Image (cartoon, rainbow, N blue to C red):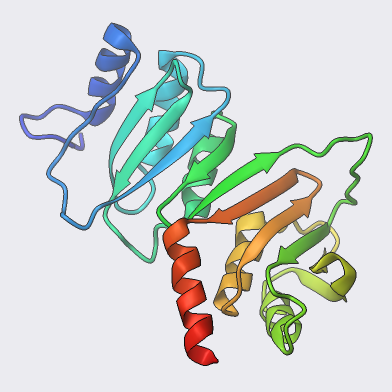
Amino acid sequence: MRRYLSGGVNRLALLALTLATGGILHVRTAEAADAVTYEITADEMCCAGCAKKVAAQLYTAPGVSNVNANVAGRTVTITAKPSQKLTVEKLWSAVEKGKGKPSKLISSEATYTLTPLDPATQQASPGVYTVVVVDLKVSGVADKVGRELQTIRGVKTVVLHLDQDALVVEAHPGVHLSPFALASAVERSGQQPSAIVGSYGQLTIEPSTAKVSARQVMKGSVR
């Protein structure tokens, strides 16, 4: 049996014990000084059993060392060692697999918020995604972002809609594109995504104050 904590205490066993006594989990192990934290809102994490399932999935993500679950607040705080293999998409997916139904993720880089589409005012066709990008009208930006989006496996076409500050991505039939994969492609092009819209809803991406400041400094240095 795999052991997680000193003294032979299994992390999931400690999770169950702590939740049973108070509803808030505080699991602590030796952490590196450069550890990173994330907070995820899990709308359907309503009991100790739900929290245990969510935590079990989160511990499978690369570098995750601690999971603090607040059942009353329906949030989980994750501590992890920085790694290129650890992405917000993997953490989000872990909460989904744990049946926690994530709706918000806060990292040091950005806040990701998923809201369902309003059937009365918003519609999205299966396999079609709208990628809203900051500064898309700046010369050359749309081409750079479009080329990067086209490299995603399963993408069929990318069409520019400057009036919406967006590119519309169509996937091949039967292909589901992750909103996080689309956002990552925009970031690889050096730009900032602000929203990804698909049949799942709208994922809004709000960069942290530090990231916005750094971006402004970079733009100033280019001038």
